[in-house]
Image 1 (cartoon, rainbow, N blue to C red):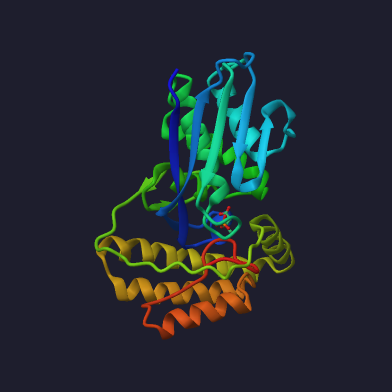
Image 2: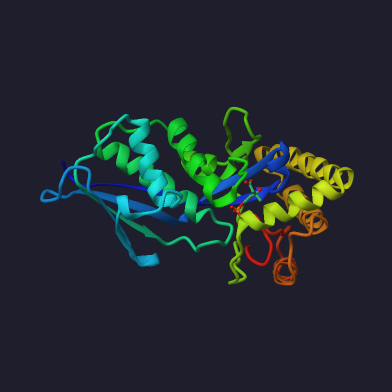
Length: 283
Ligand code: PMV
């Protein structure tokens, strides 16, 4: 068996984060400038079933069986084998390289999962279709997020802009005109899971207020979907500004994020917003 590799891009959420968890539409796009790559090679001397995982960026060099049940990389591998109904894989080595900043709203964990699932299924001779890759990556997401909407695994797997509503069929689309995005990084990382939990706690305390914010954000996403297809750049910018204000209302922005958003506008951006979970970090 020759070595096989597969890559998956980063992603950026353009509209609708957080509200998407509550069934509202959101828009995300792949970011191809950075990516995760999984390289699978046979280990001719290894015993059947021995899977070695090497991820230099996070200092990981371990055997699959020694990784905890809830380890995301191990879960991606186990779910792939289960989906293919393979009980014991041939001995192999999985090397993971990623240029995607971690915990910064760019979907690094998702890209690693998708790259592993895609490469491993191809290596074993049964390349999985995108729908199944996305479904398995979603299962892994649950370890990172608890209650993910599914937008990250969808956009990272399908590698196209998506208009996403949870539990509905995937809707990829083309933009009417090129949109130039500048993605900034505060340099601070933040766990999506805890920000999503904070929003959930606040929503439970003030359901009406939070639901009305989710509704408005959903309407912004719908308008943005139409504006992106029509190539209405000015409107897209305005909608980003509007969306950022409502993310501030959800209390998921931060001083650093607001400063970056202001700087982008002052530098001539048509609009600016944070992207992803927010909290202390992100873009
Ligand atoms: O922080 P990220 O980029 O993984 O984005 C999370 C987006 C949320 O809407 C906050 C959560 C979700 O599961 O959709």
